[in-house]
Length: 209
Image (cartoon, rainbow, N blue to C red; front, side, top):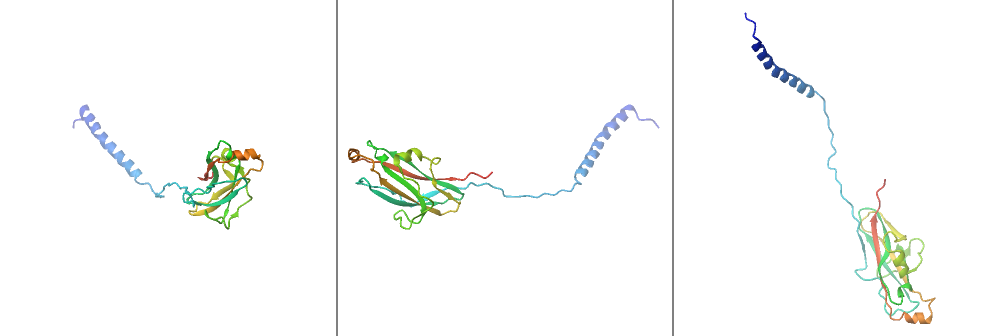
């Protein structure tokens, strides 16, 4: 019997190589297919923002519209503020858009704002303040010191809980303070006019660390 030629040996060797590769691949597949597996899933994760919303019962009407003002006169008005928010936050009050007069009437109209319970926009009957009454300041002083949320009245701040429909009441009391004015200074204020916006702003609380 003749020994296989060198060419035949080479062909057989090349032919055997794919078979060996296939066998090795089958062994690897068998090995990987033999492992135990298990999974668990937590489905439906999502993120949605809360909302802050603030309304009042003024029905689009200014709280104070006073004509024929005379020295020493004063007045009071209440307003119910409602939070329709889904997240807790803090409400602060401040003033904006002061309209000054040439003779400085805004320096002699003093205003204080208290927070409490009871009363409505049309009637302060039953109003009960929460905490001590803040000091009254002139409109000019308020426009300088309490002009935005950061400088808003912290003494009357309202911590909301994030419950839709919760309310609080604010009572504003103004006085035309002319105690230190001379007669000529008083006379100079005749026919003067000033105005200001009262603002309540709610900001949501910072997240806990």
